[in-house]
Image 1 (cartoon, helix red, strand yellow):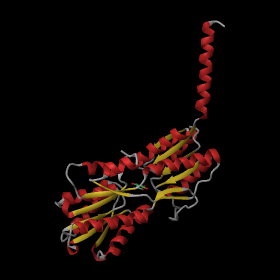
Image 2: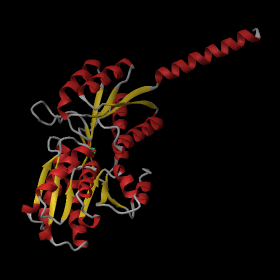
Image 3: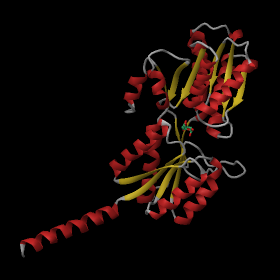
Image 4: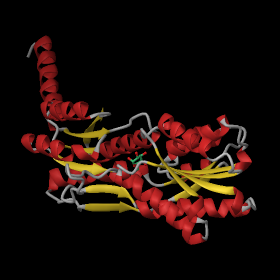
Length: 327
Ligand code: GLA
């Protein structure tokens, strides 16, 4: 064969091969409500790791609202994806998400936040990977109690500010768990004040905390309860704005990875620490389950609870994050 023809043939063959290799790489989606939270970035990173290990591509899409969520499902289907993992921006979108996914034959696994029906009933038939919400909340309450005693605060001059997001079930269970643990430890119930946050971010909890602080000028020391790091960060920022010193405030967040900047500050703040669960496992395991479901027909468990959690503070956060490969 002529040299040139041969070269073209080789190129042609390799094109065909790479094309068929491409066609074989499975695509799976990973949709998250708040990509600005390191929590979700960590889930994405570990979903990618699963994709590398097992040989599939992860299509990562931010879905901050209902419209973006439904559009994302359309574009996943158009790109030939077989299914997706999702942390929905609103649990009540569950039925609409399932209807659209089913219309395309896409498999769905939920992570972090459980779907509910329009009437607020949990959609237990959709597989869910989530943290042990009540238990992690109890741990928050117990750690707040412990640190309050370390500081030898006078309970009579202390109050709990619980910033709530009760419409989100996992959030409600965490803050209730925390308040229950504080009561069980002996904290007076009448000094536990609740305030709802208008949005699940720092500005929302900052506003909620400010309104609480002006209502209780008599309180010297504050314990801050909330469902994740951003909630506690908003609360702590509000106490700072109103002149509280770090030694009179204890906030313990949940997520850990969202607290790294705060814990890295050169001076301590009222943000004492955070409970670090396993965003790595949430990200890896949820999409691995989806992959096994699609490729091997392994039906995923309806409920996978991730229980592992560690308290990180300014003293140990670097080492603890490193242990989990999260630095
Ligand atoms: C919810 C919260 C996140 C994170 C996850 C963990 O989705 O909004 O910040 O705490 O739960 O499951």
